[in-house]
Amino acid sequence: MTIKQYLRFVKIHTSVLSLFGYVLGAAIIFFIGGSWNLQNSLIFFVGSMIFDNMITGVNTVMDYVMAKDDHFKEISVMTVEHISVKQAFSVIGAMVTIGSGLGLWLCFRTNWMLFFLGGAMFLIFAFYTAGPFPISRMPLGEIFSGTAQGLGIPFLFIFVNGNYNELLALNFTPAANGYNFTISGNVLTLLTVVLICVPAWLLTSNVMLADNLSDRVLDKANGRHTLPVVFGADKALVLYQVLAYFPYIFIAVTGILHIAPYMSLLSLLTFPLVRKNVQTFLHKQVKSETFVTALQNFQIVVTAQAITIFLGTLLHF
Image (tube, rainbow, N blue to C red; front, side, top):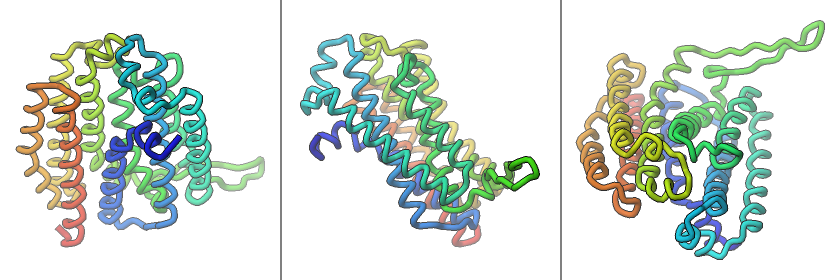
């Protein structure tokens, strides 16, 4: 598989959501006065990007293999780029091996709680498009994708930088009959990280919802039971608005209660831009024309959050 084929196979442009997760995680580390570890950051970056590419690759293959519509197979990247199923699974196998190896390396370098947190993420990735009941083909896709990318990426980025004792650590101590284990963490720090990540969590879910709304006709023809297919476009569009606007409630609450810097309240000024994008998508759900507005909403809000949290911490406000 050539580099060009690989980049199209894994839809490299979709990895942008993960990149913003790292930026938000970095801003939160700065705010909570956490520690930094450049080597762990690089290992995590490479490993998580590999897994992100892997899940997209599996999604591409499974959609192609399970497609009932001949036109869908004709326009699939598998057909356009002349990628065989055997070739695709060979690349996916290599990604799983490398990604898992990097994950285990990080477990040894940090704390073994990462084995369970990362394992949960891996299971989401593994069953997202594979198995007898793929998550992406059910109305649960938005929940799992939002949790894995919107919350999981920034949370684990903070974790691997050496802040696991403040978040969630698994410790073993020798005992007469083996080992005892304890799970510890700081409740305030844990809640701070989770609450600040909620907007990214919701907006990531909304990106998938927008994707499924744009593909609902094709999904129905190919037997995909996504949320818009199961509950209908009208109800899905109502949920789309809820997921787009609810982040502002959490931004307001965390800012007012000083869970985040007061300056983070300036992120509320992005509301008119997000509202304009929402109205554009409500008017027309076309993948090539309006899906980008959901991505823009995520980028606008998370970028504003990261910048205002960083500046607020720097200026002690």
